Amino acid sequence: MIEVTYTSVAAALLTSEEVFKIIEKSARNNLRDDLSGFLIFSGNRFFQLVEGPEQAIDALLQRLGNDPRHREIRIVSRKPVAHRSFAKWKMKRIVPSADWQVVANAGPEFANTSPSVKAAVSDFLQSPVAASAAQ
Image (cartoon, rainbow, N blue to C red):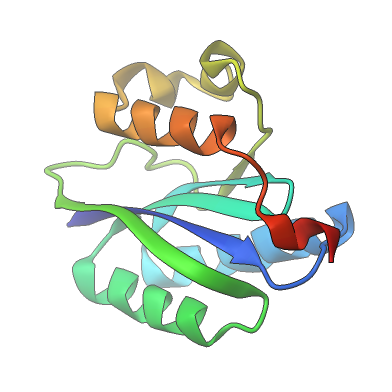
């Protein structure tokens, strides 16, 4: 089993409804593919942590690479894990906040999140929105 975190930029401005549809479809697909994790959408950027079988994650990353709603996909971390941190979350949407404690309040699962995941989320939330957001 592996854990991957990645960031990407939305190819166009997305409404809250469109982001909800992405989350809803991701949850269905993740249930099918035995994946779990969370997604943060901030400005026009995505941050996702996904965990599960390596083959299923590689297939997901390939689909994302072909998804016209994403661009500039950047793998932040890819590592083997002994167990899931977010096993109950087929795809949970986390409300963005510059305050880590607000993000952590999304669930007790964050209590045991690795320092590298906390740092990656904090870096993502504190970085500026991509310039294409205004386009």
